[in-house]
Image 1 (cartoon, rainbow over the protein chains, first blue to last red):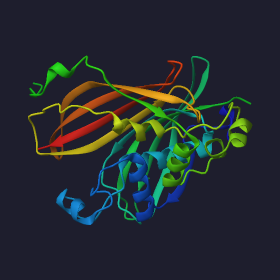
Image 2: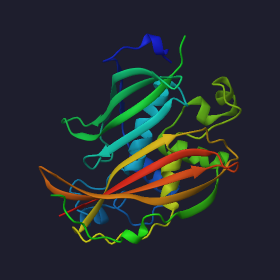
Image 3: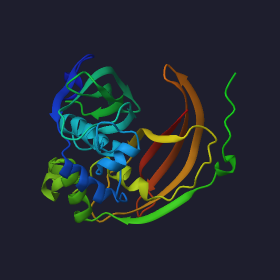
Image 4: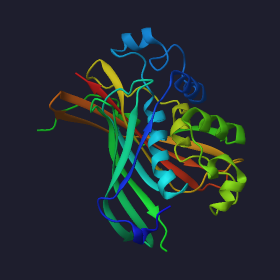
Length: 140
Length: 149
Protein backbone atom coordinates (compact mmCIF):
# COMPACT_ATOMS: atom_id res chain seq x y z
CA UNK A 1 0.00 0.00 0.00
CA UNK A 2 1.37 3.43 -0.86
CA UNK A 3 2.02 6.10 1.73
CA UNK A 4 0.53 9.55 1.25
CA UNK A 5 3.92 11.16 0.68
CA UNK A 6 4.76 8.65 -2.07
CA UNK A 7 1.92 9.54 -4.40
CA UNK A 8 1.73 12.32 -7.00
CA UNK A 9 -0.91 13.99 -9.12
CA UNK A 10 -1.51 11.95 -12.25
CA UNK A 11 -0.49 8.64 -10.67
CA UNK A 12 -2.57 5.74 -11.96
CA UNK A 13 -4.28 3.06 -9.88
CA UNK A 14 -4.47 -0.08 -11.96
CA UNK A 15 -5.43 -0.78 -14.64
CA UNK A 16 -6.81 -4.16 -13.71
CA UNK A 17 -8.87 -6.40 -15.94
CA UNK A 18 -11.95 -8.19 -14.69
CA UNK A 19 -14.79 -10.25 -16.14
CA UNK A 20 -18.25 -10.65 -14.63
CA UNK A 21 -19.30 -14.17 -15.63
CA UNK A 22 -22.87 -15.48 -15.87
CA UNK A 23 -22.32 -17.53 -12.70
CA UNK A 24 -20.93 -14.59 -10.74
CA UNK A 25 -23.87 -12.38 -11.74
CA UNK A 26 -26.34 -15.12 -10.75
CA UNK A 27 -24.59 -15.53 -7.41
CA UNK A 28 -24.61 -11.77 -6.84
CA UNK A 29 -28.33 -11.54 -7.62
CA UNK A 30 -29.04 -14.26 -5.03
CA UNK A 31 -27.11 -12.34 -2.37
CA UNK A 32 -28.75 -9.09 -3.45
CA UNK A 33 -32.20 -10.67 -3.23
CA UNK A 34 -33.32 -9.67 -6.71
CA UNK A 35 -36.55 -11.29 -7.86
CA UNK A 36 -36.43 -13.57 -10.92
CA UNK A 37 -36.66 -13.41 -13.85
CA UNK A 38 -34.68 -10.19 -14.13
CA UNK A 39 -32.64 -8.32 -16.73
CA UNK A 40 -29.40 -9.39 -15.04
CA UNK A 41 -29.74 -13.12 -15.56
CA UNK A 42 -32.55 -13.68 -18.06
CA UNK A 43 -32.06 -12.89 -21.78
CA UNK A 44 -35.77 -12.48 -22.53
CA UNK A 45 -36.35 -10.06 -19.65
CA UNK A 46 -33.21 -8.13 -20.65
CA UNK A 47 -34.51 -7.83 -24.24
CA UNK A 48 -37.88 -6.58 -23.02
CA UNK A 49 -36.02 -3.95 -20.97
CA UNK A 50 -34.27 -2.73 -24.12
CA UNK A 51 -30.93 -4.43 -23.46
CA UNK A 52 -29.85 -5.43 -26.96
CA UNK A 53 -26.67 -7.18 -25.88
CA UNK A 54 -28.27 -9.65 -23.46
CA UNK A 55 -28.38 -9.68 -19.65
CA UNK A 56 -26.37 -6.98 -17.92
CA UNK A 57 -24.21 -6.77 -14.82
CA UNK A 58 -25.97 -5.03 -11.89
CA UNK A 59 -24.63 -1.56 -11.21
CA UNK A 60 -24.02 -2.41 -7.57
CA UNK A 61 -21.91 -5.41 -8.58
CA UNK A 62 -19.76 -3.19 -10.81
CA UNK A 63 -19.47 -0.81 -7.87
CA UNK A 64 -18.05 -3.62 -5.75
CA UNK A 65 -15.48 -4.27 -8.49
CA UNK A 66 -14.52 -0.59 -8.57
CA UNK A 67 -14.22 -0.56 -4.78
CA UNK A 68 -11.84 -3.54 -4.97
CA UNK A 69 -9.56 -1.58 -7.28
CA UNK A 70 -9.27 1.08 -4.58
CA UNK A 71 -9.02 -1.14 -1.49
CA UNK A 72 -6.44 -3.41 -3.17
CA UNK A 73 -4.36 -0.26 -3.67
CA UNK A 74 -5.06 1.86 -0.59
CA UNK A 75 -6.09 -0.72 2.01
CA UNK A 76 -9.37 -2.17 3.28
CA UNK A 77 -10.63 0.97 5.01
CA UNK A 78 -9.26 3.50 2.58
CA UNK A 79 -12.44 4.51 0.73
CA UNK A 80 -13.95 7.72 2.08
CA UNK A 81 -16.25 8.38 -0.86
CA UNK A 82 -17.06 6.47 -4.05
CA UNK A 83 -19.49 8.20 -6.39
CA UNK A 84 -20.26 6.43 -9.68
CA UNK A 85 -22.36 7.16 -12.76
CA UNK A 86 -23.59 4.14 -14.69
CA UNK A 87 -23.21 5.39 -18.27
CA UNK A 88 -23.87 2.23 -20.29
CA UNK A 89 -25.11 -1.30 -19.55
CA UNK A 90 -22.19 -3.59 -18.65
CA UNK A 91 -22.27 -6.95 -20.48
CA UNK A 92 -21.47 -10.36 -18.98
CA UNK A 93 -18.39 -12.36 -19.94
CA UNK A 94 -16.46 -9.46 -21.49
CA UNK A 95 -13.13 -8.02 -20.48
CA UNK A 96 -13.60 -4.92 -18.34
CA UNK A 97 -10.73 -2.57 -17.59
CA UNK A 98 -10.79 -0.67 -14.30
CA UNK A 99 -8.47 2.23 -13.60
CA UNK A 100 -8.24 5.44 -11.62
CA UNK A 101 -6.11 8.55 -11.89
CA UNK A 102 -5.20 10.78 -8.96
CA UNK A 103 -6.48 14.30 -9.60
CA UNK A 104 -5.96 15.97 -6.22
CA UNK A 105 -3.91 15.39 -3.08
CA UNK A 106 -4.70 17.25 0.11
CA UNK A 107 -4.72 17.16 3.90
CA UNK A 108 -8.14 17.84 5.37
CA UNK A 109 -9.33 17.57 8.97
CA UNK A 110 -6.25 15.55 9.86
CA UNK A 111 -6.68 13.08 7.01
CA UNK A 112 -4.43 12.52 4.00
CA UNK A 113 -6.72 12.40 0.99
CA UNK A 114 -6.22 11.37 -2.61
CA UNK A 115 -9.05 12.25 -4.99
CA UNK A 116 -9.33 10.21 -8.16
CA UNK A 117 -11.23 9.94 -11.40
CA UNK A 118 -12.27 6.31 -11.77
CA UNK A 119 -13.37 4.55 -14.93
CA UNK A 120 -14.54 1.16 -16.20
CA UNK A 121 -14.06 0.66 -19.93
CA UNK A 122 -14.56 -2.08 -22.50
CA UNK A 123 -12.31 -3.48 -25.20
CA UNK A 124 -13.91 -1.32 -27.91
CA UNK A 125 -13.47 1.88 -25.94
CA UNK A 126 -16.87 1.75 -24.25
CA UNK A 127 -16.98 3.96 -21.16
CA UNK A 128 -19.30 1.91 -19.01
CA UNK A 129 -18.88 3.62 -15.65
CA UNK A 130 -17.23 6.82 -14.56
CA UNK A 131 -16.99 8.66 -11.31
CA UNK A 132 -14.96 10.10 -8.49
CA UNK A 133 -13.41 8.57 -5.43
CA UNK A 134 -11.71 9.92 -2.34
CA UNK A 135 -9.22 7.61 -0.63
CA UNK A 136 -7.47 8.13 2.72
CA UNK A 137 -3.83 7.14 3.01
CA UNK A 138 -1.37 6.89 5.87
CA UNK A 139 1.75 9.00 6.21
CA UNK A 140 5.08 7.31 6.52
CA UNK B 1 -36.21 28.33 -16.89
CA UNK B 2 -36.16 25.15 -14.79
CA UNK B 3 -38.54 22.42 -15.89
CA UNK B 4 -41.50 21.88 -13.58
CA UNK B 5 -41.63 18.20 -12.62
CA UNK B 6 -44.75 16.60 -11.23
CA UNK B 7 -44.17 14.07 -8.45
CA UNK B 8 -45.22 13.27 -4.91
CA UNK B 9 -43.55 16.04 -2.91
CA UNK B 10 -45.17 14.82 0.31
CA UNK B 11 -42.43 12.17 0.44
CA UNK B 12 -39.82 14.74 1.48
CA UNK B 13 -38.97 14.45 5.15
CA UNK B 14 -40.39 10.93 5.49
CA UNK B 15 -37.96 8.26 6.71
CA UNK B 16 -38.38 4.67 5.48
CA UNK B 17 -36.77 2.19 7.88
CA UNK B 18 -35.49 -1.34 7.35
CA UNK B 19 -33.61 -3.94 9.31
CA UNK B 20 -32.08 -5.12 11.44
CA UNK B 21 -29.65 -6.78 9.05
CA UNK B 22 -27.51 -9.38 10.79
CA UNK B 23 -24.00 -9.19 9.35
CA UNK B 24 -22.71 -12.71 9.83
CA UNK B 25 -19.56 -14.36 8.50
CA UNK B 26 -21.89 -16.11 6.06
CA UNK B 27 -23.29 -12.78 4.81
CA UNK B 28 -19.78 -11.46 4.21
CA UNK B 29 -18.63 -14.74 2.63
CA UNK B 30 -21.50 -14.69 0.15
CA UNK B 31 -20.95 -11.04 -0.74
CA UNK B 32 -17.24 -11.73 -1.23
CA UNK B 33 -17.79 -14.82 -3.34
CA UNK B 34 -20.22 -13.09 -5.67
CA UNK B 35 -17.85 -10.20 -6.32
CA UNK B 36 -14.50 -11.99 -6.29
CA UNK B 37 -13.37 -10.13 -3.18
CA UNK B 38 -10.18 -11.65 -1.78
CA UNK B 39 -8.88 -8.87 0.47
CA UNK B 40 -7.52 -10.43 3.71
CA UNK B 41 -9.37 -7.99 6.01
CA UNK B 42 -12.66 -9.00 4.37
CA UNK B 43 -12.02 -12.74 4.40
CA UNK B 44 -10.58 -13.51 7.86
CA UNK B 45 -10.15 -12.25 11.41
CA UNK B 46 -6.38 -12.66 11.06
CA UNK B 47 -6.26 -10.55 7.92
CA UNK B 48 -8.38 -7.85 9.52
CA UNK B 49 -6.30 -7.79 12.71
CA UNK B 50 -3.12 -7.47 10.66
CA UNK B 51 -4.69 -4.36 9.11
CA UNK B 52 -5.49 -2.88 12.54
CA UNK B 53 -9.14 -3.92 12.98
CA UNK B 54 -10.56 -5.78 15.97
CA UNK B 55 -11.94 -8.50 13.68
CA UNK B 56 -13.16 -9.33 10.23
CA UNK B 57 -14.83 -6.44 8.38
CA UNK B 58 -17.35 -6.31 5.55
CA UNK B 59 -16.35 -4.89 2.17
CA UNK B 60 -17.21 -1.19 1.77
CA UNK B 61 -20.06 -1.78 -0.68
CA UNK B 62 -22.00 -4.25 1.50
CA UNK B 63 -24.47 -1.51 2.47
CA UNK B 64 -25.05 -0.83 -1.25
CA UNK B 65 -26.23 -4.44 -1.54
CA UNK B 66 -28.47 -4.14 1.53
CA UNK B 67 -30.02 -0.83 0.48
CA UNK B 68 -32.40 -2.50 -1.94
CA UNK B 69 -34.10 -4.17 1.01
CA UNK B 70 -35.56 -0.85 2.08
CA UNK B 71 -39.11 -0.70 0.72
CA UNK B 72 -39.35 2.67 -1.00
CA UNK B 73 -42.60 4.19 -2.24
CA UNK B 74 -43.35 5.26 -5.80
CA UNK B 75 -42.33 8.90 -6.26
CA UNK B 76 -44.98 9.16 -9.01
CA UNK B 77 -42.79 11.16 -11.36
CA UNK B 78 -44.91 12.27 -14.30
CA UNK B 79 -42.15 12.00 -16.88
CA UNK B 80 -40.84 9.31 -19.21
CA UNK B 81 -41.63 5.66 -19.46
CA UNK B 82 -38.46 3.83 -18.55
CA UNK B 83 -36.42 4.05 -15.39
CA UNK B 84 -32.80 3.01 -14.99
CA UNK B 85 -30.24 2.90 -12.23
CA UNK B 86 -28.17 5.96 -13.05
CA UNK B 87 -25.68 6.11 -10.25
CA UNK B 88 -24.64 5.08 -6.78
CA UNK B 89 -22.56 6.68 -4.08
CA UNK B 90 -21.21 5.27 -0.85
CA UNK B 91 -19.45 7.09 1.96
CA UNK B 92 -18.20 4.54 4.50
CA UNK B 93 -18.09 6.17 7.96
CA UNK B 94 -17.02 3.30 10.22
CA UNK B 95 -16.08 -0.37 9.82
CA UNK B 96 -18.90 -2.94 9.61
CA UNK B 97 -17.83 -6.02 11.59
CA UNK B 98 -19.03 -9.59 11.35
CA UNK B 99 -21.62 -9.84 14.15
CA UNK B 100 -22.95 -6.29 13.71
CA UNK B 101 -26.69 -5.61 13.42
CA UNK B 102 -27.41 -2.77 11.00
CA UNK B 103 -30.52 -0.70 10.47
CA UNK B 104 -31.27 1.50 7.49
CA UNK B 105 -33.20 4.73 7.18
CA UNK B 106 -33.95 6.15 3.72
CA UNK B 107 -35.43 9.41 2.55
CA UNK B 108 -36.06 11.16 -0.73
CA UNK B 109 -33.15 13.55 -1.24
CA UNK B 110 -33.89 15.20 -4.57
CA UNK B 111 -35.80 15.07 -7.84
CA UNK B 112 -34.36 17.13 -10.68
CA UNK B 113 -34.25 17.36 -14.47
CA UNK B 114 -31.14 17.53 -16.61
CA UNK B 115 -30.95 18.11 -20.35
CA UNK B 116 -28.01 16.82 -22.35
CA UNK B 117 -27.20 15.62 -25.85
CA UNK B 118 -29.54 12.65 -25.54
CA UNK B 119 -32.48 14.75 -24.34
CA UNK B 120 -34.01 15.44 -20.97
CA UNK B 121 -33.88 13.03 -18.06
CA UNK B 122 -35.42 13.27 -14.62
CA UNK B 123 -33.36 11.96 -11.71
CA UNK B 124 -34.76 10.66 -8.43
CA UNK B 125 -32.21 10.46 -5.62
CA UNK B 126 -32.68 8.46 -2.41
CA UNK B 127 -30.32 8.76 0.55
CA UNK B 128 -29.94 5.98 3.11
CA UNK B 129 -28.10 6.04 6.41
CA UNK B 130 -26.91 2.73 7.89
CA UNK B 131 -26.27 2.53 11.63
CA UNK B 132 -24.97 -0.28 13.79
CA UNK B 133 -26.31 -1.73 17.04
CA UNK B 134 -24.59 1.07 19.00
CA UNK B 135 -26.28 3.79 16.97
CA UNK B 136 -23.03 4.61 15.18
CA UNK B 137 -23.43 5.62 11.53
CA UNK B 138 -21.42 3.18 9.41
CA UNK B 139 -22.31 4.31 5.87
CA UNK B 140 -24.26 6.80 3.81
CA UNK B 141 -25.56 5.49 0.49
CA UNK B 142 -27.14 7.46 -2.33
CA UNK B 143 -28.97 5.82 -5.22
CA UNK B 144 -29.96 7.73 -8.32
CA UNK B 145 -32.59 6.56 -10.79
CA UNK B 146 -33.18 8.27 -14.13
CA UNK B 147 -36.33 8.47 -16.20
CA UNK B 148 -35.90 9.15 -19.89
CA UNK B 149 -38.33 10.72 -22.35
